[in-house]
Image: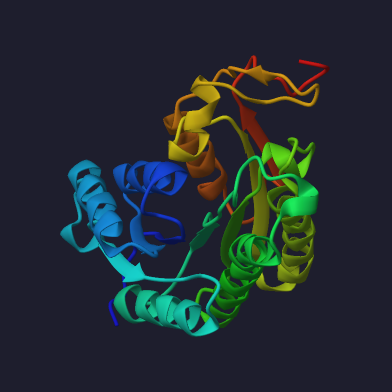
Length: 263
């Protein structure tokens, strides 16, 4: 087990999109990161990008490092192995960015959504988030010095749904309850928990925004997107607050996306 003065982050869903952008941003700021995801090759590519951007501190013992751990967050044994690997490599965990998620099959009417598709979204977005939060909580409670921070990746859908998105929307609403409960239960142990709700960051998941996505009135409309790097900078700001301060909820979205008001 290596003891280090470098801050240590565990990032789920790190193989692409928001998880990859946050990894690179934290590494650029000197964090060491344990990357979790289902695709080993994608994690390795994120690690390569992160190491290329990693800060070069004056103290060689504080150099940022990257660990990759293939993880299915819906599987308790995978999550236990992820946090054991992070603890064995780095000695502690200062941050969990609970980011792994899936939208599920898009455009499927509620009455036609297969139960297996519903279950997959719930297992990934909600059960996986719980398992990772629980494992991080245990580690942060036990370590010395005690404490740490958990940031859950919510969504604009935690406030307002899109058409034909019942599984995704339900899990993101549930994630808000998870955030509040972890925040409350973490108080005695210096464990802060917040949530970032993101709207239309430019990733593979939002590629359909450029060609048109279903609106509440039944029309298809192209929606504006924002640079995913802006999300990453917001996460880093939340992560680097002192534990005496917490950004409970943050919403970052493309300025002109149809969310506030009626479009």
